[in-house]
Image (tube, rainbow, N blue to C red; front, side, top):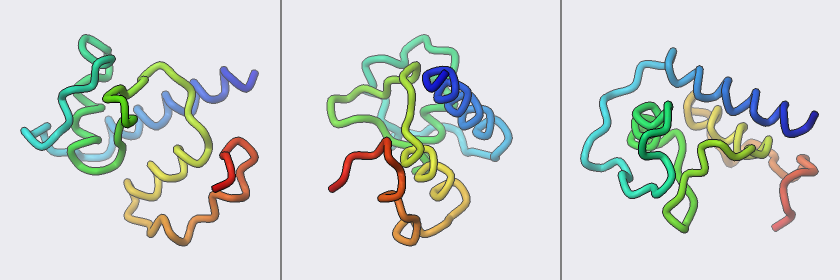
Length: 99
């Protein structure tokens, strides 16, 4: 159930990217993600990365089919809506490791 919910949330995020007007990907977008080539959301992922809404992992992967945490989801929504992430309390999420 938890895995299904996370996939649904990822789908909602990607769906939002179709609604939110984004500019075309530019040379600034990280095109070196090893795991998005040919993925159905490749262009939207690149647009969102270019616009600063999302980013990949340090190992140059994006992991488009992986589940996301609530903190990652909140961070994406905060960036997409221009909410200051510093005011969002991610410590309250039990699926986020403490720092």
